[in-house]
Length: 579
Ligand SMILES: Nc1ncnc2c1ncn2[C@@H]1O[C@H](COP(=O)(O)OP(=O)(O)O)[C@@H](O)[C@H]1O
Ligand SMILES: [Mg+2]
Image (cartoon, rainbow, N blue to C red; front, side, top):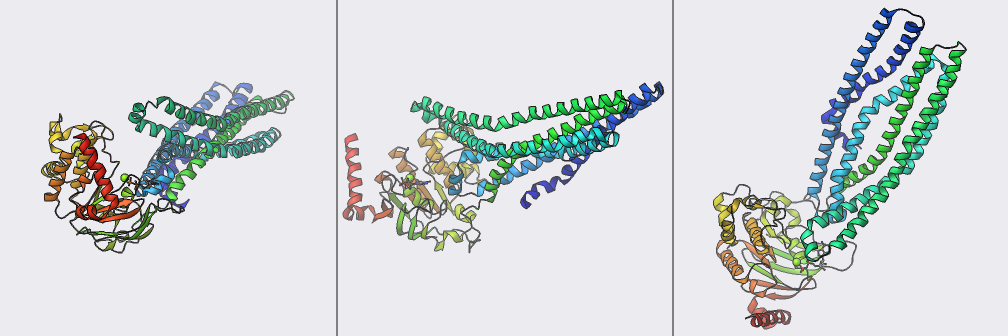
């Protein structure tokens, strides 16, 4: 709880002023019925004259003005407090998610994180605002109303004193039933968001596979589940209102009946009765407010738990214990020592099994292997997108865990297999590699990646706007832009994970040629399907089912390695068929 104070502190003043100003509303609501009752009894029944009535009316008008002004300001500050503090909370959660490792994100699912950042925070914002407005007002009206009623007529007050605890019990029971239902409702909202997000992000694939009906069905199910969960939870909220209104009307009727008899018998005056009726309505209204607040907080509490889960998650990949925090990657030498890796700690089967190899500084390492053999998993260990489960990954002789993440990832540029561009201009996207790059440098990197030619043919050239995810360039163009972006980082280690799969062989050869002149000192790791992509590499690893089954240059492997030969000749055959 303590850590949430940091979100309140900067807005202390709003958090205090909001409820405090609501005191004026409480004051008005307590004083006005009494003044009104006096006006009836003194001014009308005892005929104290128009002067008295006008004076009383002016006093009442003054009260109302104070009440309204105070009320508006009270609401204003309460809203401000709620909106500002929840915006800070949202930002903190967002920052926290940025620190998450891939496996942290996998464990929450993106849809759920989006719900937590949006809907859950909105719930908390609403309840904070409501709480601030009612913190003083509802109890004030309740207590003030009871005191005033007791002071005017203790006998009638006893009706309220029976009613209040009864309603209290009813509210408690409602809340206990509602709580778990709101939990379920938020979870269904997660699923709905995940489904929607997956669908909209991948709309192109869905259309091309004509999976529309299937997807619509999936959405309808998620949406139907959400509807049922919401109905189940809101049913309780809906019940609250009529129960409260009924109780309110019964209480008012009782007061009117008993009080009316008392007036007829001469025990009480009409004005006093009118005041008591108004207090009764107020007391019950404040109870109603409290019950709405309690129901609201039940829902917000469910959201609060979900947000705390995010805030309390420890990123399972951090550089807190880094021994050489100021060290930069200078040479780019890579060494794997008995490295094993699996995605799920509690599973037995390794994705990578006891790998050991080295890649010298400035050399080119090729990695070949069928899909699923662990190529992508292997290279992700170098910039610490995941941590090795056993063994050590060394860069320049130092364990990657001993670098600060910032320096390590600065030194290692990786073009992921599934890479994305962002909406914005091409230049903006390339600048991800280096914010301060000159136009010259941007052109240079694009030239090496063989992207300059087609970029300049675009209308607007480097200023052409890319759609979300870079939808308006072809697959091969996107890959080349991603390579250029990585080059701008001027990394010591460059990893290309199947990054030229959509680029034709001739262009790919040009990229390789450009690399050999401009990236002489950079260590290059190239994962490829085609042997032609790695044929010139200083060393090639052949990976099979998470194990290294071949290591050497192309010439060595052709002579000694059965697996490599198989891949090579099957690709040669295919090429011969084509030509
Ligand atoms: N994020 C992930 N979570 C769990 N398993 C994964 C993940 N990514 C890959 N895998 C599994 O790890 C194995 C190796 O995958 P990968 O390294 O992507 O192979 P390659 O790049 O050689 O095609 C596969 O069996 C795949 O199912
Ligand atoms: Mg892969």
